Structures are given as C-alpha cells and as structure tokens.
Image (cartoon, rainbow, N blue to C red; front, side):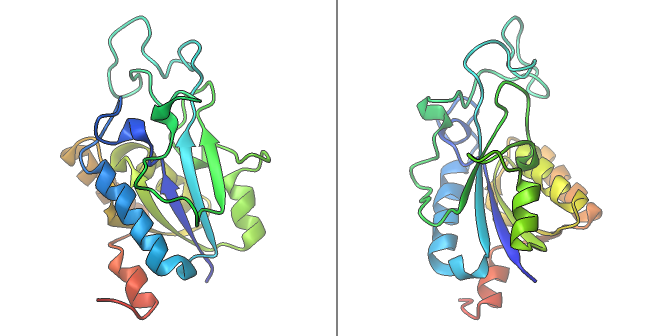
Length: 203
C-alpha cells in the first residue's frame, strides 16, 4: 500500500471572506497544516490543487458574466490566476507539498484529475509513476471539488478515504449528500484520527 494525500483547493477565495468562501475553510487550512506537521511520513506523495481560472471571458461558461450565477454550473468570478483569491490560504503551510496542480485554466474544472502540474503531467500520470494505490482527500469544498476529486480517484482504481474533519462544504445538506454518495461509491468516510492510528501516534 502506497498512499497519497490530495489537498483540494485550500485557497483564499474558498475560505471565509473570499469570493466563494465556505464556513470552516480557514480551520481546514490550519488542520491540513497540522496533519502534515505530524504525519507527513504517512504519505509517499502530497499533492495540492488550485483553481486557476483565466481573468478573461467566462471560462467556458463557468463564470456568470451576463446573468446571475446559479451556484450550480455558473459562479461569480473566483480564483483568477495571479490574484490573492487564487493563492493558498495563509494557514496552509505548503512546505511539505510535493506537487502543485492547477485546474480550470479557461474552462470549468472541479476534479484534481482535470488539472496538470507545471510540467504538464496529470494526476493520473503522477500516481502511476509513484505506484500510489491509496488516496486520502481533504480540502474545499466537500460538495463540489472534494466530491469530484474523490469520485475520480475511485474511478481510477484508488482506495479512497475522505477525512471529514479536514473538509468543509458550501451547504450542510449538499455536503452530507456528497459524503453519502462517496461512501456508497466505495470511499471510506473517516477522520484524520485514522492517519494518527496508522502511525501509532493517536492521542
């Protein structure tokens, strides 16, 4: 078993005060940093993704530029490349991140599998290269990009755990539905205590 950690979109625009901020986003950022500080050795590979949208146009219909956003398929502008909103939240310490994935460059994108790293490699290629069989998923938002990334990881044959104390969603009802869907699809719905227990340092 070789495990990776997916850290999904812990960005300023998805945390409190951002363009699409979710309650608990800053706490997730801090919690992910604590997980890495205590249990970095649990992971062969740590990958962080970011939305990295174009500042021009509607990004393939993702940004609502001519009408009100429906907050399902169309959204207010967010995580525009080069802006503070696209940067990682300051409570998320990135020193232990091995790979940074950018997604949504001019197009809609929710899953980490839709992005690439600076060399143009996809997450699928990176996981294969490192022999990854298992993935833990944390980040923002539970009901959108965390859900999409975890479902894609399952589709690609990974054993997936979603750590519920290190995710936060747009709405409670849709987040609960996303976790139920992921559990039904084969993901283990757990908390970060499983990482501590596996490393023999549970408190």
